[in-house]
Image 1: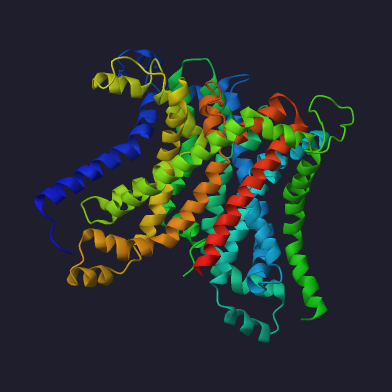
Image 2: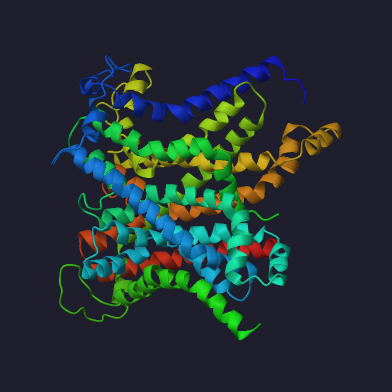
Length: 282
Length: 290
């Protein structure tokens, strides 16, 4: 690498500083708001550094009590987790064998794969109306498990696409030797493909979890109270409410962001590789 | 292939096909059927078949056409900005400098923040009375009075776009950066020896290497932006004066706020057709290249 001239270094480091500010300032401000006393946030001009550290907003969101904010928030936290985990679990159980068939017998079942990719592209609004009527007739509205099944419309095509691409990279020769040993299809999947697929599967699962955690549209339509309501809905309601306790809204946002941000920071490389793999063919 | 094996393969596919059929295929067919009726969410009497009336009405509805324009403009501006910003940031983070791995680690932060949190966060930042943006710009002397960023018709959509770009440019940057890291140093060196300047090295070596990855990012982002709902709905509910009402929000309001399921379905189907045309163009572009 050629040595940089001084002015080039200055340019480079200024650009980096601008980038770091751009990347972090909005979220940093969210954190600062969440620990500020609420009176700090309604001053003109704004008080950038909190007059005192005030954790009462976290306390009120995370304390359980009948008919309190904390009750709804904590329920939503658990519901979000249940819904996301269940949706991803169902999707993976169903997708792994299917993706194996799609990978090993291309052409034959390519229609299924095209269908999966196609649905990935459709707006949720295209299924939302009949789904709503169906769930309401069955009495399944406001239920975490039916919401998780609906989340499969988003998670399942995504998993199919990525897992199939990953199975493609596992050499078929390995399975052939298992066939010679008389292994059944089930054995070939569980003892030959699965161990090699495991790291990629972890990545796909994390991406799918983040996706489900993020979902707002269906949750807005299909849930209404603490039995099934998810965090994004609670946060959106907080944001559009008339109340002005901005520190409380901010704290809700920080808590809801914590799981994906931590997962993201820990597994950044794997997550990006997983996302890119789906589309880039050498 | 043996018949037994075919049956076994179908068995492996069956659970996925059943779930996809139940939550995707069947509802999609139902949406098409709904679009031909005057079905109403509140009215439980049997809906009447109305043929293509909903569709002819839809194509004449100025509100709907405007919402299609909002979605297209949103997709165009947001995706273009993200591609340019994302690629530039990836190039920057590919240069060696002190603390590079830390900055690279921070890159995932915006992408990891949930969409609704992002919307709520920017809503607070844009707040016309106590928002950080107003306070900052005022203290710096850039504005002399507070601005209602998402409350004024001509600024709202761009303010929402800015918030979306903040979150999602980082995905493009991460994808581009991952691709840059697989570019062999030797190629750049060889070009330098051959006398290629910075721009030529970028244009003829780096950019061609980046294109396949950028295409993935482009497709992912276009798919997401043309059906945009969450970020706009949380920030503005489609207002002010419907200036930020995207097609998805329009359909949602028609079907669930006005409880007109039938025409809502027709609007949704038209949207699906437009997206399919977009995909067809993309696939055609791909096959031409191969």
